[in-house]
Image 1 (spheres, rainbow over the protein chains, first blue to last red):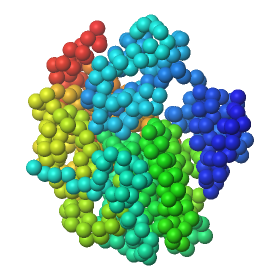
Image 2 (cartoon, rainbow over the protein chains, first blue to last red):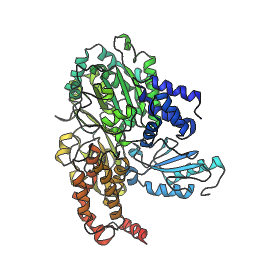
Image 3 (cartoon, chains in turn blue, purple):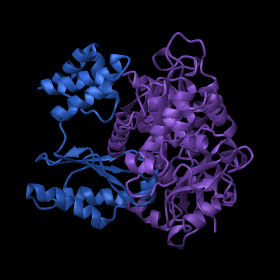
Image 4 (tube, chains in turn brown, orange):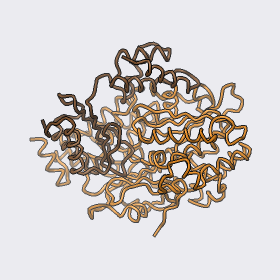
Length: 163
Length: 433
């Protein structure tokens, strides 16, 4: 369900541009923030407000990696595995996360708590290895810091690591 | 000991410099005030005379780019700041946007004034949430002070600035794909010509500059073209923010005059190769530029010298690779990036990056076949110059340059089904059993 408030935010986005269609990416972002992922209702609302066909909106949403058609975990951990982080040992840290969180990259835990993903270079090679926890950077990762992140996520749910 | 020369990064470490009040206390927006008192043509001329060249990768002279804007178009002129920083090995624009966002906003306003654009967009990479919040606030503060929007600083100049967030696509750093994305479409590159200067965003004359380029403009206006041109070399004027990463003791951003050598950057600023190891190779300008062997470490970091050494200064992302690194593995990792980021518009890039990544993975795992190196080179030949946009040529660059420098290491993987480096040797062997 896209709220009237979210629809108003989409209309406000449209007002910022010389051409309404430029607000398509911001509108999709608003829809995703509202529902956690891009739903058919989200597509419909964006299509109505921007004034393009729903199929067109779906096509565009599918092009950009940050829009997703399925729900994700409460926490999303994105680990950069491009060259800069690779040279600074990201593969071992990704393996550690897989083991401690009990999920494989690209998967969400059965309880819906956490999604683990790999990501392309995140403009943080000088502080590699790096991950994003819910879109915020955690840089200069060590096995200890990774473990702290796992504890933080698990503490929220009261589960024990690797469950 | 060489010192950093802080022009773009001036005052960047002052606490609170990311707020309007502290930025203005330290001379912020004085350049904008000065520019508004000049004729737009004079501002453009100053930038032209400074010798400033694009910091996004291509190194095209900025003032000249501005002067190419169509004069008699019936449509409005637009300015876009390219903050879609995604090139593996670069992390300078993110730093500017996060730590000193008003400098970019000031640079955008001055540049829009000089080029006659009444509407500017800052296209920021979608993943950079914090940088987007910083810029959003900086833009709001600038408007609140009357330094953006209508009658800027009481003058008759009107310039609007809108922050536009991407949503995850490396290709949108390519200028025509960026415009498509800004128009609310898939980020597919456009056929050129027409070039953006003639018909770009919404069909209007459009100038697109990298964040660092635009953030350099205030200092040039404030201190003059000659002052700026006194830094650097004859053809590569000024400073650049060199992004140092990989196997060094002190990775990070270092702003240095062009012409300083890679050795100075890596050894003096980076504290040398880590763990007491030796330099095997380095990438001079981001993963899309050919890697160079350790023998090129004394090359000066300017456009011309790096070109003579067989590579490009690109986006100045210097990636250091030590001698314990399996080059096949490293290149395999670089290629995965291009495979994942190829937009799919043209076949040579979409298919080529896929097959290159497959072959490299097979080689790295010790499963390579007899003529795989030739096969890799053939695929690269079939992509070279045949892809729709520069991403295809970028994608073959790590492969071509690594085979040129380390052919024997590739062949060792095929003959011995193994890596010549012992540590990697063991893990490759373990993976097969």
